[in-house]
Length: 384
Image 1 (cartoon, rainbow, N blue to C red):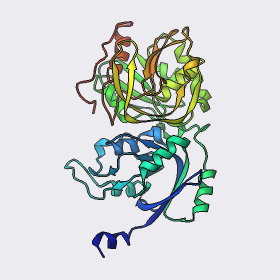
Image 2 (image 1 turned 90 degrees about the horizontal axis):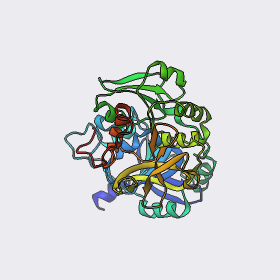
Image 3 (image 1 turned 180 degrees about the horizontal axis):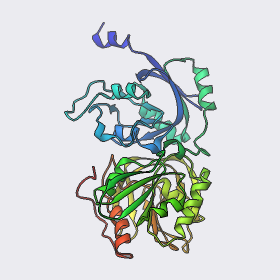
Image 4 (image 1 turned 60 degrees about the vertical axis):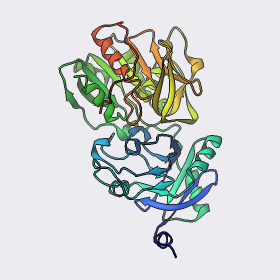
């Protein structure tokens, strides 16, 4: 018997069951246990730690399409939140060993330390094709219960992401200053903000103060901000009526506003536009987006399962500034009745390209010189 076969005998069996009855068997990674959530996939070749710690993925089971995961370990410098946000991890080939002088630990040690359940040695290519054909659906990962029928029933009973308000589960408990720059004062509504968004403002010498998602606009204004930023985050934006009302109040003021991802959707809903749940969603670091003002194409990082309905975008309310070249969905809006713009994708990347990092400067330029054009071009370096 070969050494590999002997070692496989000591591996813990694990199963992944989908709500449509699909069940696959693999090997347990990370914490042994059971977890459920919406199964989605990310096409990024690197950046698994940033993806795992992105608050926008709270409660979702993440399947990586790139086969080899864990090769370069994990590092405290690559965290996008204080802890992992995904419910579980699905990979093809999991590396327990790593080669990276900057790493602090292996991915398996990281997952065990943060109680993340996962499964490896499954055909992720087949599963991704299945999801693309059937749409995202709930699933359960388990190394405890290995009964197929039981796991499928658990997956079917798991709460749907549609209709869930999740920002309150990931927002900060109290306001805090992230950076103490001498530049513009940026108030951040934290619906699940990524650290690299905050770093992107900090590197431009901004004074950045982060507020809980439920903060009243009056409290924000008492701090006397030069601009207000609405962050990314998880869940269904249509289930956030209080936040929509707060954003609507902000859009009635003469103050620069900028929204990313969930913030973009909330600004759209506050303006009377419609948002819908996507069949599969956009999750990866290679999505082409066209800037309609410059006709330049930006390769972007995306991670969202909801989108603005293009048919609801009325010219007297907003102008579409960016479009996804894969499926024609709305990727950016400039609002007509206020000093506000938003994008569906992530200009801060992490992981991913920095073609769209100019949007942070566009926001700051609107604060310092209203109406001044900003050249769209790839950033010279990462904000990290």
